[in-house]
Length: 376
Image (cartoon, rainbow, N blue to C red; front, side, top):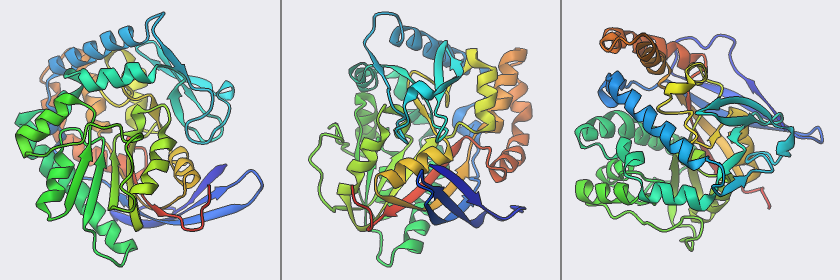
């Protein structure tokens, strides 16, 4: 199930363009999708993530300890026997790299990269339901407005533009699955939308309630009886990397959407400059390639394959990342110079912009609509 991309030879400085993504099936047939592509997202990443090498080193050490505990001999394991996106036998997958001594394998068919021998689902669910430290990124009170205005508001603006471009009706309702601290639900509510969210982390739900007076649902989304056709948009902002079976979430999402509804999926990309930096500095990873949470890292082809395979049609994509920040932080950690990040920070926007345009950034968002011709 090979995918090809048809795009202008020179991207140029434009923030938006149109590409044709074509899927070639094993039988030799093809399906093409016109995809509106947005490139780049302004972000004061240092204001959001900080410039402290000490904090990064401490969090990386916490992740290392967590990985040691999760993957120690004798702990319950879930061995993934087929590619989570295309279904290829994982015996064909090749070990691509290791983080904290945990190997990631890459599917030879769709390029999806994943931890093949994972902690059991019960172990992972317990970790994220109870761990306060894993939720610290989304429960930081000092960075509330920065996260709302620089991370979530641009996402909502992109969703509104994309929905309007591909749907004649007005967007009125949003369901955010894996809502973390409730930030996206909050900006959606501020925009006058009906917005709800699911979140299993107790610390994150408490943060959402105390900070925004938002009651997030603690139920298992996969087991919750779907409110059939209730929401115009359903969002998975950084969720599918956490689960051994991401296609189950995609299939379940169909049931919640109104006719003409849209699914928004954000995932980490494996074919990224930032990913290469982390593979080279595997002992100080503090985000992105983190096997204590991200058991999946997607290729564009693997995400597109999973979406089409569950009855969705990709219509828009958005490329951006924190690769330049990752490079400078890892340099500062290796050189042992705490002020280095602050001195290099002014270079981040220009460098990151070039990486985004070149499609080697570490994040992608895809918007997909229900494929009415699809049958299971």
